[in-house]
Image (cartoon, rainbow, N blue to C red; front, side):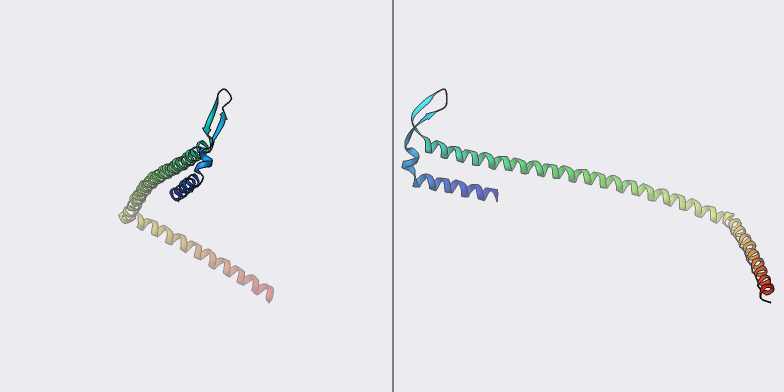
Length: 147
């Protein structure tokens, strides 16, 4: 897009120069403050200056675009490195989890699981007796209050 715009500008300036050759080449007096030139084609100088500025801004925009692309590429490289780092950390966490689960399964398979199961069953029986006792007390209370 920028190249097309630059080409259009240069073509229009060239067309302008061809159509106005006499006016562009008309001699003028040019004063730069410390030196004075006479018989200088001022229009041609301004036309060349306009083309030079168009080229300068074209290359400046291209350089800015290249910088943005370089920054984007650097950001993508950093994100890829971060993703690889996170993937490796996730893999090590899964390995730790697998090791922990294997050790727990081995402990359950070694008979410790049977002891834990009997403790849980004893606790359930105790809780069942407590609930039955509380229900009986509640039943007695309601019978006394209601008649």
